[in-house]
Image (cartoon, rainbow, N blue to C red):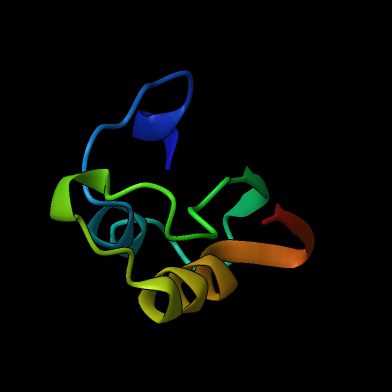
Length: 66
């Protein structure tokens, strides 16, 4: 995980989180789309896969702000 400290990581969030160790993240802040007001240029947000990875990488007692 040291290689990710103080870094901006660009990529598919599910694939990026798969490279993180389990129970390694203290805090996640995210703002996924909640409505159909925007098209996001056809991009689909795989909420279940995202949540699965967030659960896997978040430390016990860690926080996810959804």
